[in-house]
Length: 152
Image (cartoon, rainbow, N blue to C red; front, side, top):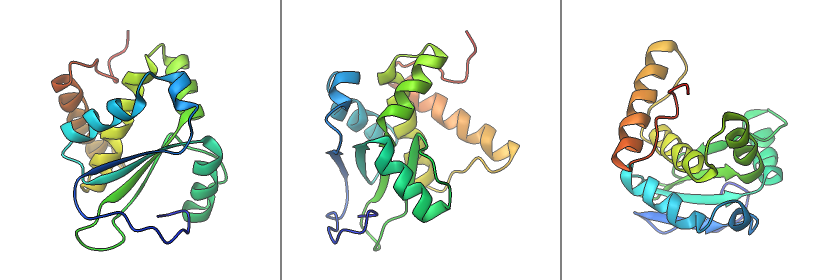
């Protein structure tokens, strides 16, 4: 696990860890939302629903940015093992509220976003960002969730 522990997730599939129980006050059954989004994106990942503090610590350690972000992804530690997608509850709640989005929809979007990163997608320049946004929109549409890029 990326926090320095020695736990290595088993190979293949989707694994959900609820590290911050406050997720359940924000979203009813966040594990099911995350699993459904990860399945739609064909993820091979351990998804960690965690706190801003945990994401801030990892963001500082691995990216040199001393603040939380909505989602962090880490490539698999060994071939055949899942990557990790870590999601910060407070950041996601604030972003959803500011954008007038349902927190469950925003969570699903960011799980898909993280899964696409693990599959090699990126948004480091305009063309790649547009392709990634299109892939996110297509996957969310399959889940009957709104386009996060459409202005209301």
